[in-house]
Length: 460
Ligand SMILES: Cc1ncc(C[n+]2csc(CCOP(=O)(O)OP(=O)(O)O)c2C)c(N)n1
Picture 1: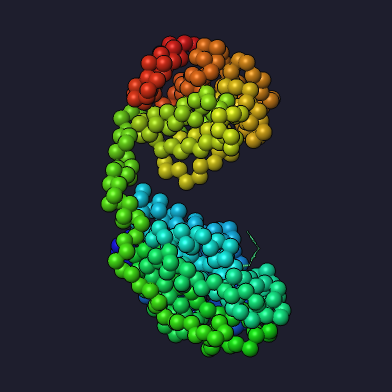
Picture 2: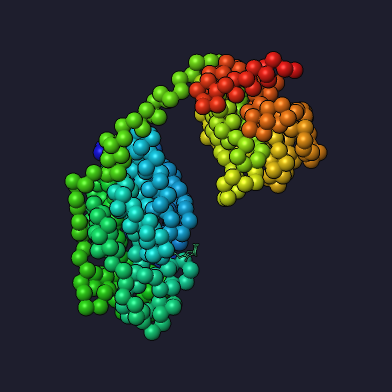
């Protein structure tokens, strides 16, 4: 992302909360109650992050805070204006990198992704940090480094300094710590800074990091009041000297404005990918009569073209002006056992891709029925559900209208799923057969597919 998006002032509400003057903007909840122990640096860093966001005047809709696990992971609940995304331990950077790549390659690259992670999370997910720096994704990492695993009782981390006393190193740590700044320099990170939690200009450094167009990390040093203060003599104002015999460099350690962010490199190198954004691939040409939202589950045997038939359904729906999503499922060993697709069709944008009560179930083989039964799909059907099953299989008792069809016998195993889809569309009438003909004609097996369409349309 090259530009920092700016908010309309009405989109950030004013705060009379714990940190802001009445009438001031805040990205935090107005009544945000910090859950941290008294004196914990997490307070300062979180406030500085809020101040940085205010300073940059970002539109909160263009800010995504991705939090890790630990005390640090409690912060996303404090922010109610930007997007927040709470993830698994150590993996927050990977989630943020994925979101950023999707945003910059497939969408408008408007999002600023900020990772909130502790030193424990950074240790567990170290390679994700290296990978994000190497890719140079436009992600800013704020590393709350209290030199130990706080939430679980103060255990030693890879960031604990030599001689540091923790719950698991009561006589002092004997393993030299990782220097994350040096490590990420080696991965070509564009912006690296080290600060302490009480530095008055911490918010400026975090703001610089967020504004940097590419990977940025700010390591913020702090002491855990619960588990570090008791056993160690070092105090907050001396944290730069926490590594015995060495004074850590504070401030912006590296800034390389010339390195271009991943999204921009990708867009320049592969401009064709941009066409996906403009729906150039399929321009709606037909009408649909979908009412509300429709959930269709199709299941059969791997290798029998279940998922490609579902995809043709999705393409036909889009060609008919509908929105559609598809989720596929099959065993890890591709090409054996079941194959299943869940398709949601809707006139409106689809925000929930799950199917709680299926409107249509298509089961074309024993493998498919077994999986559908295991996933409770038949049990979740309702009186209005249409259930199309191959004549060769038995399904559990369930509500809904059941049509038993000679799909495998008439259209061969490779055509059964497509024929089931067509039958469902014929019965429900929500999509025109012309759309299927159009899509089928674009396939390698066009002749076979067009003849199935002709047969299903012509049949009873
Ligand atoms: C994969 C995984 N391993 C371990 C845990 C247990 N766990 C929960 S919080 C935590 C400590 C987090 O420490 P840190 O990342 O330094 O954050 P802090 O609590 O100090 O803010 C751990 C190990 C977990 N939830 N998931």
